[in-house]
Length: 449
Image 1: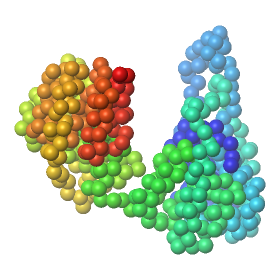
Image 2 (image 1 turned 120 degrees about the vertical axis):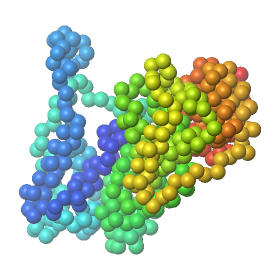
Image 3 (image 1 turned 90 degrees about the horizontal axis):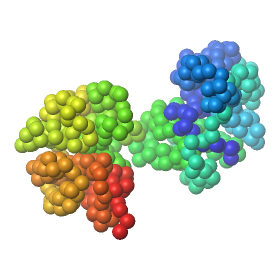
Image 4 (image 1 turned 30 degrees about the vertical axis):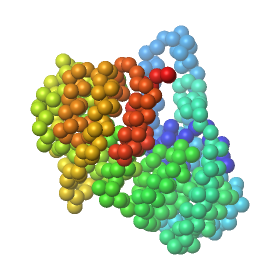
């Protein structure tokens, strides 16, 4: 098991190292020569540096003494993408793996785009030539000392907890990846578990193996101890998604209009225009089925637009939930909700053209459970906000009213009792909300009794 100072997502938001490089081979025109193949490698290294350029403009404006005080008279070497790539190559070259195993894994991961054996190059020699190409590329001089991991709780030994589960996934793919599963298992056990798992994922992607959504989520959980960004698993995988109607119930935290309102909270000090922030939220499905964010947001917006609530009440609701100042914004509630609904329909048409959105039935039976919590928390709310929220619970949808209440309480001044907090968590469970929804929003308000 190699040393790893911090989670990979601190540096990469997609696949990386050797598995990321094999993606470039699989998606590119097959190189006809060794020189062209190594050109794909150097192109990958250059692309990473282009995405993370060295900006000296702010430092160059400082005087010599200011640079010294701030530590900008110190530099460290940054090897960029080559650092993880060389670690992967070293793991393979130093492991007791046969040329047959190395060759099978390389060809499968690249989709056969470049088989060194066909060009008279042994697979070990090819891996060594790639390593030498990386080593010959000079590191960049970065200002300041080499940063340590920003996640102080990072502990790599947690990887041991997923070892057997990863090996079980590989073994179960014998039919999907004929003749390859034993080679991948050898890489995972004799070279490096992390690299073996990434090459396994890459082989599934290159072979376009259909992967059910539940299994994809399991892959994300197995990658968590390594600190993968979810795109390392999801991007390029042929996921068989569940129906949108099922996926809407799978959010861990907040969702819909209440989640969108949280994106506008001024505490985030965003300078993003409202239409762009709306668009980002609508398409931010993450590793959920494409379109699910748009679906739940459309449902909330349309439900409010079709309700008997007045335009002024809808405007008040938005300002309350988004924690914005009505005196500094000309937002009109109904017009904004129509804009949201239109953006959502556009997204659904793009990613789920066969889906006809329809409003699911409301949980009217839970209105009597929400109202006491709202009224007990009313001292923490503006009177007009409490009134608007009660109208949502009674006249529109108790679920939406409860989520908006939790959103408004998130930025409230004051405190909640442990009993209030416990009842809110229990109520969230009755609505079928994710376990993180209530706790992430209002746990900080709970006072010791």
